[in-house]
Image (cartoon, rainbow, N blue to C red):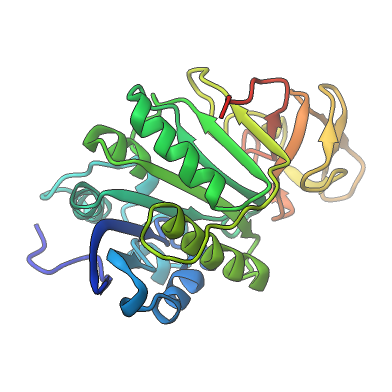
Length: 306
């Protein structure tokens, strides 16, 4: 077990009492927009105007960040490793320390992107918590974040920061935006604005929460809902060329793109397995068989009443 802290954080304490909000970025080491956004929050949050405390962690997974990789040197996905173990591998130890941070907080926001290989449309999400009061708080937080898509999904997924929050009774949301080996300025500023808006909705700031229109608001309580990499896998290896764009609507059976062999003499058409809107697309052209190609939000699922 490491005797040194594996997670570096910034703590901003307000002049007035209030709740403790934890904001995480860099759970995956190749997701850059959250890191930049959380660093910017250090300058945007004014202690004199803050009620409560905010803990900012721009890079949770430093070893993976230094590898320019989703995973650390033990090849474990940190977002499948919570609650971790104090005497485990490096990712298990980081997950253990991050779980302790989550348990110390009153609310959690965990920011993500598509990483090096994919691009994700902006959306916020939460698990469909069995505790109705926690669920309503998560709905409020996700709406306040101000992104065009809100997605409530299964509370049964394990190993994630949200499952650690679920087990600790801490209301939590996550967000996805950007990726593809970039650091999109609009995602950086949008993430920072979203976090500030959630703080307003939680009574931590006097400024009003953002009231942005929501284009899609879906809740899906099926067992694997929210597992982004579950559908639309590559049937063969090769060069993927998408035929759709983010936020485009598709019907089951529509073409998502093609995969071709190196000489282009073998072409496989990829068809959508669901009807809905494209939330994620692979941007790295080379794909191995069984790797995911697209995330489709099924828009025929019910929206919550609020």
